Image (cartoon, rainbow, N blue to C red; front, side, top):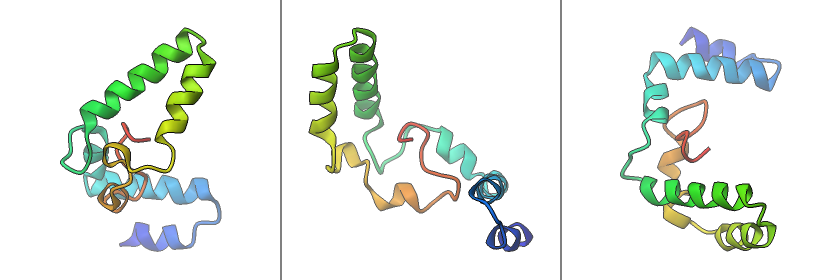
Length: 98
């Protein structure tokens, strides 16, 4: 509770985030963030998509990379926009999503 009060009085985003990470650590939400599996989204498909992006970047295939990225913008692809992913931890969501 004391950390939450300090967080409300934080003067910078960095200070706020440091306190958010401390709170998440105490509440064990940091563990939730690092564990990729979750019923709220499709971790395997997201992982595959990330691998595809990395492959295209290593090949320096800008056209296919842009085409692939554009195809996923503003869509709830693989459950990435599920509100449950953004309401559990204070310091962010699943590391795989970030």
